[in-house]
Length: 248
Picture 1 (cartoon, rainbow, N blue to C red):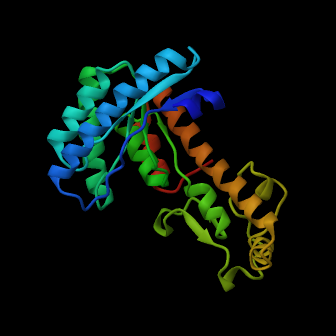
Picture 2 (cartoon, one colour; picture 1 turned 30 degrees about the vertical axis):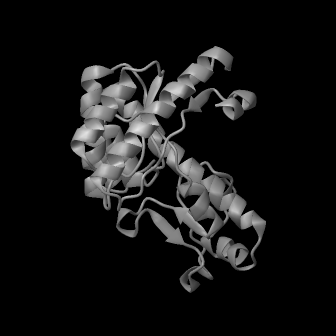
């Protein structure tokens, strides 16, 4: 908390233990209890020392156990936090993750409907769409930058996990753009997949920079569309369109 205060971050996140998936219920319960003790210590320190404009996010733990998730949600929501973050083990697959997130957001709808909700460490395109449908406001994930560092770009192709691997030989002479209509520097300046593949294989830092900027722009466009769809009251239609690979 002291480091976050010194950095002057707008949002501070309390200390917690992120449990791995394989731990049992008993360990998860002890860990969640420990996280709640840390929550109180963090809040007390923040109230005494941090700038008064810095907001604090509490973290809901509880692993994949519904009763622990429910108890943790109520505990964190009733504390002095400004917003709620959902963390810890969310399961071994996407279906279980959606179930765990659903337990938490359903309880938040009842006990803290006005507090912002953040989903920690989630950033795949389909997960962003589903998370917004479940009532999540914000996300964080290294996925866009990590893919860019490894020569991969996000594209509107759900069947290919929304990505294209530019290190593959088939792009060697391609004059195809990364993504039509994308405002990122790579697309706006007409860099082809073939040229970007050349940069990737030459280990040029420019490749990492361009692909990272493109991936961040792609995620930003997805979130802008979802945000506007909520405002316009047409989230189900927009979510379906994005899942179908339709982007402006």
